[in-house]
Image (cartoon, rainbow, N blue to C red):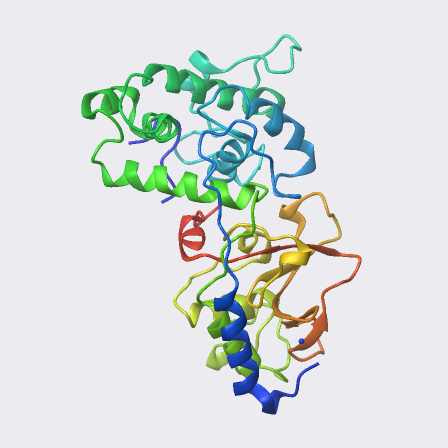
Length: 335
């Protein structure tokens, strides 16, 4: 059982396809890097635009409240709970951006902005309260063996008593999944400190997308037979990665959270590249494509157009995600 909320549970000729993909395979597997796990590192920064601009300063500040949390971890919790929606309300009566249930809010809600009230619907109170609650739980289980951050998350999900009783993360599948989910999601909200690892599935995803070149765009298209095998932008990226065993969310702004975020000069074939009219907020992303190298992507651009190669260096380029299997699995089914 949960403490606050029930866990929700590029120009290249198409005819050169095979040789092109082989080059991609070689490129993907020759490049490697190390991804820092960052658990419990309070100074860990946030990835560009991963947190909506309205909340970024709050998350960065309060995510450093204690050593058991960091801004990326706090952001992962808020995203998993509400998708950064301050008006979210669950069937279990969990409320606001941090999804406090009333009883927990009564005990642990704080006046984060010092305006004289404690308002669960106000992110200026709810985000600080979420951080404070995390740190309180960390204190409760500070003597338990194991990783302090994972123990804190386990206490958040199953209660501090269970962590103390079992001497760490308890043997509850839901709790173990919750801990893995949040620590994995943390990577999609953190600014990488080193080059991130290449995706082993990237070449296969590109190969799938390349076979769809010339297909007419369809809004809402998933490539099904009844849709004539047509796609929109995120339908294409979803199907491409599904062809290599990775299930992505349906919409582009959620696909952004399926792994860590390489810089523009670190892009590798297979990375998803995103575009937005608001470069400060990943929730406003409106377009996605699959990077193939040389500054180009394969994408389904718009109604009346066909799946094609397009350049990525445009004013609305937002950023990129290196899709990982664990990252995709960690995404909530509904936010």
